[in-house]
Each structure stands twice: as C-alpha cells, then as structure tokens.
Picture 1 (tube, rainbow, N blue to C red):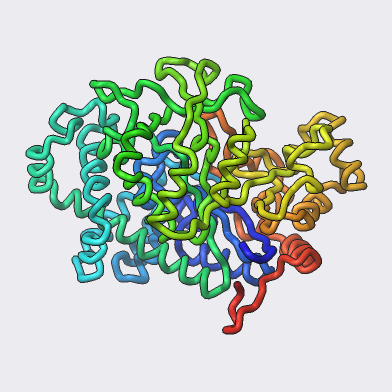
Picture 2 (cartoon, rainbow, N blue to C red; picture 1 turned 120 degrees about the horizontal axis):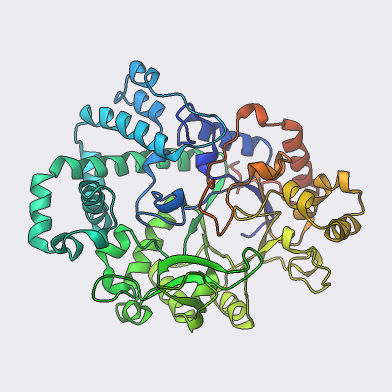
Amino acid sequence: MKHRAAGVFLHPTSLPSPFGIGDLGQDAIRWLDLLRRFDHTYWQVCPLSPTGYGNSPYQSLSSFAGNPLLISPASLAEDGLLTQADLDSYPRFSEDRVDFGAVFEAKDRIFRTAFTRFEDGSAFRAFCRREHYWLEDYAQFRVLKDLHGGRSWTEWEDEYKLRRQKSLRQLSKTHAEALRYHKFLQYLFHRQWETIHAHAHAAGIRIIGDIPCYVSFDSADTWASRDLFEFDSQCRPTRVAGVPPDYFSENGQLWGNPLYRWDVMKADGYAWWIARLKITLERLDLVRVDHFRGFESYWAVPADSPTAVEGEWVKGPGIEFFEAIRQALGALPLIAEDLGHITEEVVALRDAAGLPGMKVLQFAFDGNPDNPYLPYNVVADSVIYTGTHDNDTTVGWFTNAPEYDQQRVCAYLDCRGAEFWAPFLRMAYAAPSRLAIVPLQDILALGSEHRLNTPGTSEGNWQWRFRWDMIREIHFAMLQHFAAVYGRKPREAADGKAK
C-alpha cells in the first residue's frame, strides 16, 4: 500500500441475489461498479472456502477449495448449463438472511442438474491437473463425508480414516462420477471468481481476502495431512486453539481447531503453508493473516477443556516462518490481524515481517490516552477500521455502550450523540493509516440486528444480507467526499487505470 486509499468490507454471502445467498454473479459485478463509482479501491472479504461447523468461513472443510455456495446459477444459465425453467423452479428464500441448510440443498439440486449437461473440455482437464495437489484429496474427502452421512472423518472406518491407498484407489473407480462432481464445482467456482477478480482489476479495485491461522478439525486439510497436527494415535486432537479471556468473551474463545506440529512443518520448509498461501494469493490481491499473534505465541488448550480459560502460551514459528514464505513466494502482500492480547514480542514480529497491522476505532475509547487505536496514536503503516466482521455495527456499538463511553466518543468528535455516526466515519478517513476500511453496515448506519458475527456464539451468525433498496447513494457520496478531502481517492496510472 503505497498510497492512501479506502475500501469497504462485505462478505460475498451478504450480496443480493435471487438464490438465497450472495454469489459471484451480476450482483457482485454491480457491487464492484458501485465501489468504483464512489472512489473506493478496496473490497475486503472473509475466507472464500467451503464452510463447515456453524457456517463460519473460519471453520472450513478445506483451506484450498472455494465455497460452492458462492457459485451463481444465473451465470451457469448464461453458459448453457441451466435453463430458464431450471432457474424458475428454484425455491424462493428470504432476501435479508441466509438459511444455509435450505440453500445448500437447493443449490446442490440445481448444480447436479448443471452437471448432467457438463462435458469435460481442455480447460476443465487443465484445471484438474494444475490443482491436483489439493483437489484430489478434497474430492475424496467430500465423497467419503457424503457416504458417511456427514460424520467427521475420525468416525470413518480405518481404511478411510487412515487413508489406506488400496481403499482410496478403489474409491476412485467405484465413485468416479461423485469425485468428478466435486471437481466440477471447484472448476465453476474458479472460473466465476476469475471473472469477478478480472472485473475488479479492470475497475481499479483490489480485493483483500483472509487466511485463518488455523484449519478446521473436520477438514480435508487435517485428513490429508494429519501428521502436521497435534493428534493422538486415534486421530483426536490433544490440544486445541483458542484465546484467553478478552474484550469479546470473559471465558475466552475456545475455537477447537487442532494445533500445528510446527517442528514437523519446519522440517520440510513449511511446504504446506507455502502451498496454502500461494493459492490464496493467486485469488486475491492482499491477504489478512487472521490471528497473527499465533505465529509468535499461541494459546494451547487441553482438548477436553470446556472453556478457553485453562491453557498456556506456547512459542510459535516466529520470523523464520515468514522468511521461508518470502523466499518461496517473494514479496508478501499481507496484513497482520494483530488484535487481542498483543505483546511487545508480537509487535516486534509484525515489524520484522514488514506487515501493516490493524486499528479498530470501536476499541479506542476506554479513557486511556495511550490507547493504540486512538487516531493520534495510529501509524501510517496500518489499516484502520470502524469495526470488523467480529464487532457489532458501529451504530449498535455506540447505542449499547455505557453513557461515559458515549461521552468520550462525542468529546473526541466534538458532536452530540445523535450526530456521532458521520463524524465517526470521517475519523477513519482522516486517520494516518494508509488504508481505511468500513463495513457496509456502518455506511448504511444500521443497528445491532444487522451484525454479521458474534464471537463465542454458534447461532445466527454469517446470515446477514443487504438489499439494493437499502443503498443510500447520499451515504456513499459522503464517503466519496471524505476520500477526496483526506487523500484516499484512486491515483491514476499512466494507462488511465486506478492504482
């Protein structure tokens, strides 16, 4: 990030579409055009991988695969794989919330219809060859999971749980079409995402994505590479990931993700991580490294603990990890998610790796003049947010805050409570940080009922969607004005495109 710029956070599942969930069709194109028209040059999203437990993009069935739910049926009709009658028969869903279970069933039905009309071509075969290093394991995992009624891979028969090659070769013969179906879905995701990414580049927009520090316990990642994780002889985690009590939860957050065997990863030069980051960077322009502090030290919780309170800090791989990644992949367009319990050692690692950190304005007003999130304490090499996907909306946060916190905010902004919203957004654009990101809910001045995720809970998250009739261009025009005043408008390159 050489120049000051501004962007908007919106996960693609929150886009409008007639199919019950946001997707990579024309509404995504329209969204990019809206950002461009109002001089915003970044679109930030959560992980794009297939969701597992709790429908969370941070609990994925694979950290290499794309989420089939994001595939646009309308685009498949344009490709001749679906008919208008197929689209007309699709169930009607809420425009405001995602019913993940029902949407999954409806999309699976219509995708299987498209699959009956799909013929392998050179592009599909080339995709399967190029992505074979993860695609074969992923397809096998999905087929076996279906054959076992969705149960975790640790509950499968040993021949499959332990990946005995004779059984997997037999699976490839007896379930060839089922394997081809899951590869077909990944091909569709890849092709549609490439279209969206190309349109973003043509519009001068860069996409910021996310790579979780950890992977889901029940995933193709752990099944295919179980030696890289802290498992016992029965393939059960011995310790799991989380964070101690913090701003979000008095009992901490017990994520349950298995921990890495960093010594094993180091032995082969972090090859698995290099492959994971490589495919992520192929799809995105910048990547936010979630839970960055876990690379310096991570919170290890006994697997049988009911909360994250009991645990210990264990040293992570440190700077040698990032040096190995940089040697393999070159310059690292990464952002460090350095929120939570941050020590001097974490700051030193972030600086040694040369990564910008995150600043969140909702965390700034605790009365401490040295608070690192107050704008006058923020450095240029950072990304500032009004709030993140884990925060309440800014209007909801302010409304629910104690009166003395509201007074601090208003004193800082020199405004009355009823007027705080616009000055609060202005504060993000005026901050020293080179990049300012605002969630769409904050641009629309929406309350807590429009929150995307509440950490530490498993119900009702990731479901929020917006409708086009909710967009108020006057709000975007205000942010366009802020971008102009505070030097965040796109810079024009010699070819006339934004940079």
